[in-house]
Length: 500
Image (cartoon, rainbow, N blue to C red; front, side, top):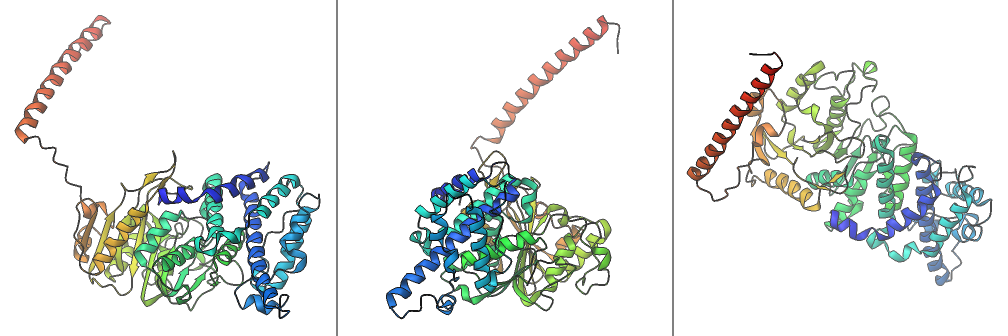
């Protein structure tokens, strides 16, 4: 994946570098909405213009008919919001006001975008000269010419999200899950059809990768329905824009909302759930939810939401549903505040399809190691669970960040596929199948290292006797040096009056 991505990011990188001049003294968290908003505006303008020209050629006079656009899943752009007007005014002092008004006008004509688009381009701290230069760049690049086939605008949006995540550090966890982690979940779950749900959807990355997976496997995106929610109003808006660019229709609720305290999809039973909730969330409102029906396996501790997330998702699973969740490694072995008992009940209910231990440094937000929990309400392999130790996988793409390669994600996905089909050949140090009884012997701890063991050392071809002879000689030399050093130390201590 690393090589593939780096070969395809020329256009995205050009947009990022040009838009970066807008930053000035603004925080990354503020100016990302300016950049992402412009990408979105140019995208819907290009798509509108493309459809507009088709209607003009047809000659029936329907080029200003809103229904002719919505029928083709194209946003209608009013005359005063079209890109040619923005381009003509790019270098006027009021360009920020013009873009803000264009956003309002588009929202008025497209109900699904109401309250979603950023309208902060007139703010004084935004350099209007730099804004005009970025508008020029977008004007000179016809984005639709790159074609939906390569999904260039979606990729640009995703690329910029990743760059903002890199710049924002810990705050990035609110809106961005690294693509390689999401791809791994998708490769395991294979969400071809049915209801796909993410209760903490961030900017919508789980849904985007599900769509990509379906298309890469010649499936039909119309065979899935998407549900999600997020508690952060800004992140929720980014998700709506991201999914709109990708052509994904989603029910993210009418507004942002806290999943625990205001579940917007109470009756939903999903076929697939993919999520990356905040790690070890302390203040999650647990004291207000002691008698909640979602806690079928035990009341989660008030000071850590890990087992609240797990049980919330299990509650929303359809009878044959599967879920994949990214959690901190502590969730695999913790026994504090009743977590061990909850985990034991989930294991005894035969819900654990498998656990994947991932390497460190996959996230911009933290360097801690994380794991994937794969839960299945109707497992093919009853009474058994798959353990994968992927801690040695991945490639460092910078000094601080690691990515799982496409080969890594496919290898993990294939292991789960083979396990389900009862064809997996266990590999010491990487994969192992354990029965519920075996897990019980480990006190219901799910750390993969306990089950997969260590890889056998590679045979270097040197006979054992020859190795031992060499090692014993080296050890003898070390003992001699140790004795000499001890004598020198004793002598030095004696000279200053210390003897022992």
